[in-house]
Image (cartoon, rainbow, N blue to C red; front, top):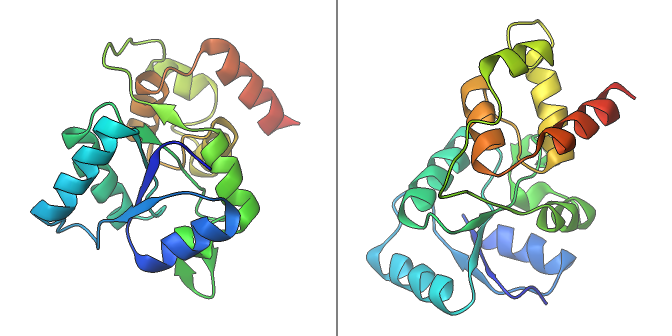
Amino acid sequence: MIKEVIVVEGKMDVVAIQRAIEADCIITHGYGISKETLKRIKYAEKMRGIIIFTDPDSAGERIRRKLAQIFPRAKHAFISKEEGTAHNDIGVEQASPEAIKSALQKVHTSSLNRQEVFTVSDMMKAGLNGTETASQRRNLLGSILGIGYANAKIFLKRLNNYGITKEEFQAGLKKLEG
């Protein structure tokens, strides 16, 4: 059983998570999160902590950003687009139990004392920005590091916000190359 409450977008996400692990979940029902749901999330955060686990698509990212603004101490779990895609659909509900377990083992908390450890130059040197394969490399490295897929700007922000160290970054790049 995971101590924190997992915040997801829909009912089928809960089903997928409960196939993988024992956990309590709160459903946002999309971007228009009701006041009542926000109260439940706030209470869960206070009592047990929360993990935001949204779909690896643009709608899921908008929901994640909204929740992260309201709950800056929340933890975040990510699956890659590949892990969350099946039957011409994308979402947590499409992920395998193994992918869900892996994502929950790699949760990250956004740092309130954000430090600029990584720069655009680091991204360029690693081939994560400005190359034909940059998007694919960010997707793979994001999966390795547990910070999910994002465009270059958001990926850089996640590297700095989630406390990824230079050592973790370099180890991830080695794994990516290997």
